[in-house]
Image (tube, rainbow, N blue to C red; front, side, top):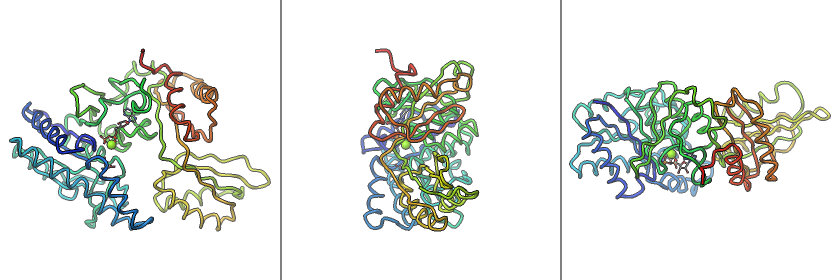
Length: 406
Ligand code: ADP
Ligand code: ASP
Ligand code: MG
């Protein structure tokens, strides 16, 4: 008998019929002889609806209370899914984050999991029940409700799989696997049978929201075999696993697009030691993560510093920067929330050169201006004006030979 964790995303539990479908699938897995843990997200659109209610009241809501509101979406789906399993003759028990218990730190809206006390889950499994767990939510040491960041149910599922030493973690979503790029942006995207943890980590961190980045980090660390599958078909999906030799022959495995970053430029920063430390230290104090960073060559003792942050953190960033520029006697701060980041990823880049140059040439041939660049061993990212985002993805997908053969 094997132990499996199945996670169903928002679209897969989007209405009552779909919830019944999830129940059918979970019961089928149980009947096939497995012990089954189901993790569910809120119904699609629900988390956005809850956030809109919050922001209708305050632009800068109390973060603890915001989590109290947005965590409710998943409470509804665990109850409904358990009722559906029951109605179809199965046995189920629902668990909220604090009942599991998924203990996190206290960084509201992007809390990190510290540990999972899985006794309750094991108890339910021992009784032959399907454990149905709320994704996305946890509880801190003081008992406050926390949430794990957008897309956080993936992380709940993989963390639980690691904690209970599951034989597999299956992420059910609205596409039938991981593609070379978002299939909803590039119709020529190709489904991958396998992808390495590392490449998936890069793709996820670059905005391929099919898996939340932290879920991939945990899967890689604890070697959880991770599948991405469709809840609407029986396609075997994509296996996220350890890298093998065959994978290195492929130069670029995927292209990612992220529209969720905003660009912030600080003009006239005095060219002295410690300036960057002060700016990024102040952002870090408010738990704002910074992505791309570019510093211009100084002219007359002053320089410009450009970086990107998540759009959700832009207002907080502007508040922080207002204070910091005053302290540093730096110049005006400009923001641009109409940019996009396109990236190419592949473990093959380790052994081949000239990939970045080919990317820049492709973008330039399409008339796309590059605003900032960053690279890692297996990735190149370019920040570009948002209106060119889809064009850039399709051009790069074609250039690196990823298009499906027509
Ligand atoms: P869920 O609600 O099931 O968690 P998400 O909307 O979070 O689903 O993630 C699935 C979506 O991820 C797909 O509908 C697709 O548009 C998007 N996506 C982005 N990049 C990729 C990729 N490389 N492969 C597959 N899907 C991708
Ligand atoms: N419901 C949460 C969200 O929309 C978590 C998830 O779907 O994974 O971000
Ligand atoms: Mg998701």
